[in-house]
Each structure stands twice: as C-alpha cells, then as structure tokens.
Length: 263
Image 1: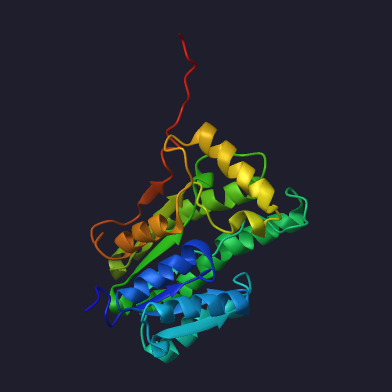
Image 2: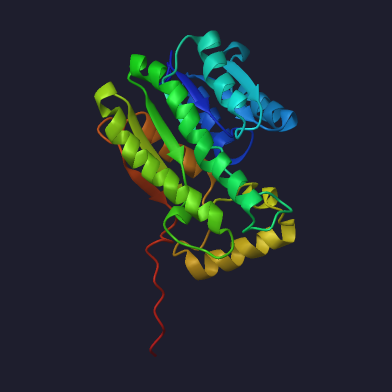
C-alpha cells in the first residue's frame, strides 16, 4: 500500500530533472500521474522509468506540449480528469531561464520567460481549482532562489520567479476557504539538464557547478533532483498545516555571507 493510493497528481515539466524524479516518487507511492514535457523522446524516458519502478501503464497519462501555450494547460487538466476522474495534487514544475539564442534582456525573451514561468502556472492553477476543491487537494510550485537573489545574467528569470513566489502567497489566502493548500519550493543549484536548455555546453556547465559551489554554497555541492522531489512530496502530503510557505533547499546559499580571513 502506497501513501498516495487512489490519488491523482499532475507534474508539469516532468520529462527531465526535478519533475521527472518527482513524478516517479509520487507514482511509486501509489498515485496515478500525468507527466508532461515538450519532447516526446524525453517523455518516453520518463514513462519507461515509471514502468521500471513497477508503475502500471494505466496509471500514467502523457501530455506533450509547450506549457506556454494555453491549449497545453487545458489539456493537462481536462485530460487528467477524463482519464482519472479527479486531481489531488498539482506540481507546477515547468520552468526555463530563457530561450537559447535570444538576447537575455530582449522583450521577446521577457515574454517567453514570463509566459513559461508565471503565466502558465496561473492558468493551470485556475483551471485545476474546481477539482482540487472537491478533493481538498494542494498545489506545489517549484520556484528558485533566483526569486530571492538578483542577478545580471538572467534578470527576467529572477523577476518571474519572484512573482511566482508572491503568487503562491496570495493564492494561499485566496484558496484557504476552499480547503486548498499552496506552497513553494525554492531550490538552489540542482544538478539537472537546466543549463543545457539555455545554451550551455557541458564544459561550461561543469565549470559553473564547480565554481559556484566552491564560492557560494556552504555544503560545497549542487543538490540532486531526488532531494528536491522529497521536499515536494512532503509539502504535498504530510505538511497538512502548511500553506503559503516558501521552503528553501539550497545548501545554505541564500544565508551565506563569506567573511574575509583575518589570520
């Protein structure tokens, strides 16, 4: 018997990284899961991962599509309810730092980053609310410590994630009367494919991980998608009196203020 037997979970951006691992964790605990991504090839890998962990095919729904397109958001909710009859947990995980090839501060990139990281979350949440109210379900948004720490490299990403954090706080108040909780995970550096999606080479990404961890992370390493999935799972299950919260999982990065050596 799993902890989530009979429950239904949607995980956006679950073709790789944190979302993929999260979908697997929820499925292993008995939930029926809707997995989503842009790439059919990557989604197939998530599907095969779930099957390899003993998850029945009839407990998996695949939705392929661009999360910034409204049709994809409607399909995620409508087809989940059509197949499984309910929604208990919505994990808004899909996100992107920017579109490869675009100037980071171009208005085209601004629209893209906000459409993916914020607009899609607001829309799919709105669509899911009637079903979550019936099940007294909950929502977990995956943000970033970029919401807390500014940067001149990907400013629109940091701005969008800051807005996402405040969306979670505002909607926790809006949805409390409906019995729906909403919380946010703010990961620090996590070892996923994220860097490659914004145009980094493998060499660039490895150098970034090493230099960033050595100079900014007290625990001296990036986190893993498994560590993030466990926090998401906690927020969606045992954290029954927690709503409107931001949980920072960053190896101490946000609190780190290096002091000069005086010896």
